[in-house]
Amino acid sequence: MTDRLPPLYDVHEDRGARFTDFGGWQMPVQYDSIREEHAAVRETVGIFDVSHMSEIEVSGPDATVLMDRLTTNDVAALDPGDAQYAGITTDDGILLDDTVVYRLPDGTEAGSASAVLSDLDDGLYEPSGEPAYFFVPNAGHDDEMLDRWVDHRGADDFDATVANTTDAWAMVAVQGPAAADAMEQAITDEGAAVSVDSLSPFQATVAPVADVPSWVARTGYTGEDGFEIVCPAAEVKAVWNAFDAQPCGLGARDTLRMEMGFLLSGQDFDPDDEPRTPYEAGIGFVVDLDTPFVGRDALAAARADGDGPTETFTGIRLRDRGVPRAGYAVTDGDGTRIGTLTSGTMSPTLGEPIGLGYVEATHAEPGADVAVVVRGDQKAAVVTAPPFLGR
Image (tube, rainbow, N blue to C red):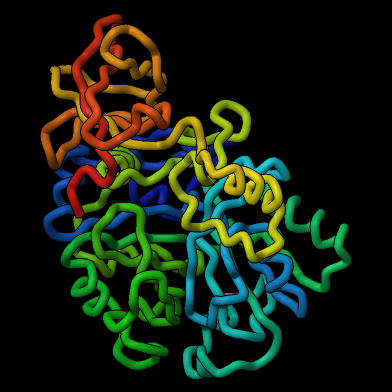
């Protein structure tokens, strides 16, 4: 796949960022050091370019039923300005991806959400027209999800418009205890539909960030307070430059999310290499069995058997020296394999080695003694239910 460049690529390059391929995108992995960037988010505020994330817009009379058919949560429960976390599953209930779904102002036409952002006084919360959404699949999944939505729309004869708008948008994440203050300083006072600071987690509004009309959501992937800003790609430099914050790359984003136990699509689950249901992956809370989504029957049957998954996603904290990595075996301490790590790092906050992965349910009780095989040696470890920071 040809590498895709985010619209801020030149800005990152001028700042001295190191780049990595991620989902077909050339993205900054770090600017200064992962530890320094990680600490900024935990202690003050950091800013990330997350324009590699995908954006798919859906609108029309049957937009809600189409979204409910293809995501595991209850999309019909969303009002304009609401967001929710959800899974996208196969007929067998296996996770294809995880996503955040946003309800846009009613009447927004898929493929033209920027038109709504350009007129901030139209009244975001006044119902007008058909329902509209955008959802955010992970990097490199945009074409796959566009095809999936279009195919199901056609098969069920739904009246909905679906558009892949990934290249039209940029996304910036401002994260950390001081994120709200940083946002208030960057937002033009006139024109915000509601106060950004008044947003609850998983709520969004239209606001002018550095005079750029933007969709601002109180969401993130770090475990800290924070906001994700979706703005026109052509204007993202003004948004980025409006923040006096430590720039952070994907390296810090990874260590931050691991400390919280957040899943990484394609690594902690993958339909081919790590096929897992939402129940196995620890996100059963995003499954609403009262909605008729693809995979619902398989997940309902799994829940009905009453036994739960045989393996479950959990955290591991090493007691011995060593750094856990994806693919390392988890044993019962006597050499019997009971699981596998899918992610691992040295926690910058704790100064301790931590890992995430799947362990047999009979050994997954928090506090259970286990071991991780690091370069052939069994390292003493303990099962630790994430988040590791005890929040």
